[in-house]
Length: 158
Image (cartoon, rainbow, N blue to C red; front, top):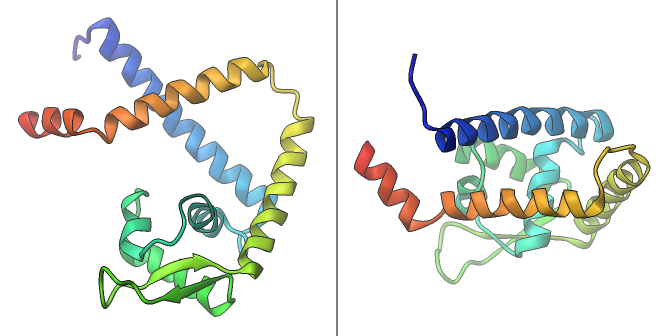
C-alpha cells in the first residue's frame, strides 16, 4: 500500500470524485437529451464552439480525453445536419475552422433550456454560493493542470 501525504490523499479523493461526477453527468445528459442528435458528445462540441468560437477538430480533441478521430465522427454528423459549418482556416490549409450555425445555436439553446429547467427545480442541498465556490475550486485545479509548471513537474517524473 502506498503511503500518501494528506494533500496527495485529498487530491486523489478530489480526482476520484471528479471522475465519478463526470460519468454521472454524461449519464444525465443522455437521460435528458437522448442518444442520438443531442448526445453529450455532440452537445459538448456545440457548447465549445459557442463559448470559444471557431475551432479545428484537433483543437476540439485536445480539450477532451478522446481521439481526434472520435471528434471527427461527431463533427461529420454535425456538418451533415448543418448544425456547424466549416470555413477556411488562414492558419492551416487542411484543418478547417468549425463554427456554430444558426440552426446549431437554436439546438444548443433548446438543450440548455431543458438543462436549466431541470437544474432550477433540482433540490440540490447546496446554496448558489457553495456551488459557485466549488466551481471556482475546480476551475483553479483545471488551470493548474494546464499550466507549464504542472507539465514540467510531470515531465520530470516520467
